[in-house]
Image (cartoon, rainbow, N blue to C red; front, side, top):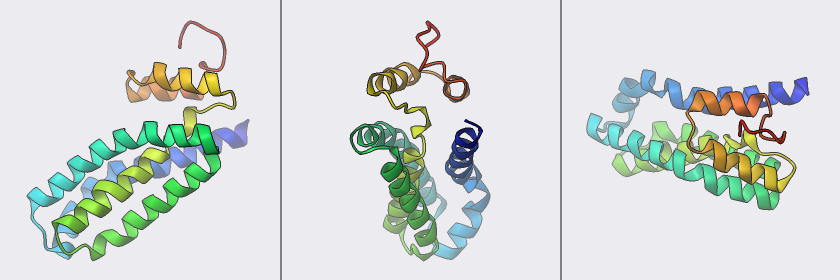
Length: 152
């Protein structure tokens, strides 16, 4: 159980850390790619949208194919988006790397609420969809959705 919690914490640290710390690198990315602040802001805004859209898509894929291949594909998307960002030379390149690849990969890393029982996984994702991120992490970390309780 401890190993599972440590692995879940590591996945959250990578996916959320990549998204949360990107603001520190806006100026160097703009200097490297020679795009304007408006294009960078638009790519980050599309990334926010893509992150939210990717979560239910990758959740459905995890229900069908399992969590491991979905998490591995998300990690590959995240790595590809991060590695290709310095080579983006125009607005479309930033949109593809930061707006789609990196954000979709981070969205795939949010599968930590999935359980082995399919009904419990669906119910947990639906119930936690409207909650804030802190409440979502707390509910997933204490595994309250897998118990038959009224908190979820």
